[in-house]
Length: 105
Image (tube, rainbow, N blue to C red):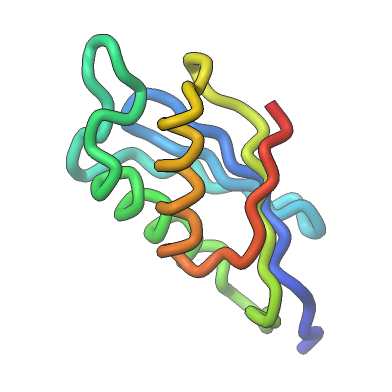
């Protein structure tokens, strides 16, 4: 089993996230069990976004990964993210175990 750094692309849509492993191309489309979006806000409930991200990342964790410095690239969002929403996304990803978050929107 090869041990490698976890390096993910993350896209955020209304009440779902898509996560892609940048090395293997493995793709997860995770719907939220509890809605995190509202009619006007893509992130209305950050704790539910975090829950959805954790579930998607867990599906990626087959095989061996080094969690020494995992990185997430936020590459897409259904709506533009305000500075406050970017902070919420960053907090959710850090709580989900990511060490570095890069916004490539």
